[in-house]
Length: 120
Image 1 (tube, rainbow, N blue to C red):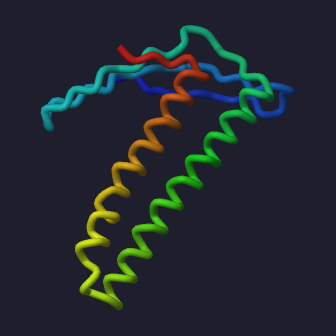
Image 2 (image 1 turned 30 degrees about the vertical axis):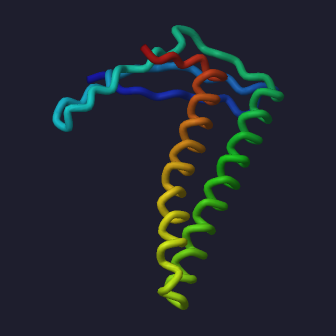
């Protein structure tokens, strides 16, 4: 097994990421095999605009996830005070985990694109 690690120079006028090691991510126990990601062969340089863009997308993801969690908390509170509203609230509760997963997946794909990480 090889280790994976990236370093960043935050004191430069731009962000530089360097690939040091990689390792395959294959798990057979749960019958799910995750193929290793294709990391860049060389160091990549991100401009301040790219870093700002990733930061903006991260803030959007946090905002979206917090919104979905707030809906879940509100639905649970309503269920505590008005158990007769369970049918309506269960639908809303059931939708939130998928929305959270989608927000994380979207951000991950955007990061991989900027960082030049490929999937087989």
